[in-house]
Amino acid sequence: MRERPGLTIPELAKAMKIQPNYLYRVLPRLASEGQVKRDGQGWHPAG
Image (tube, rainbow, N blue to C red; front, side):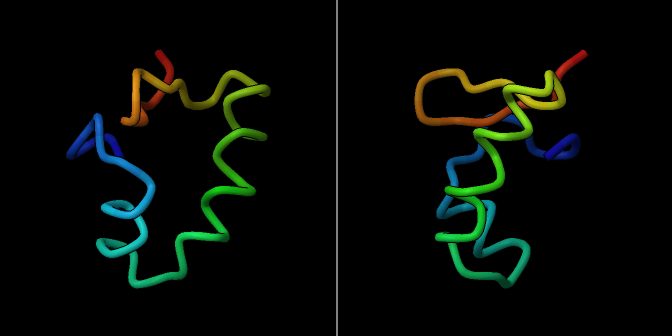
């Protein structure tokens, strides 16, 4: 995510070679902890 900020969940999943449904569960939790942030459809590292 740091190398390519703003990726969507499907793009992240493809790059990581994992299923998108995992990221749909994990990224909102990371956002609530302040580790990532969402900008429209894309996700960015916080800070």
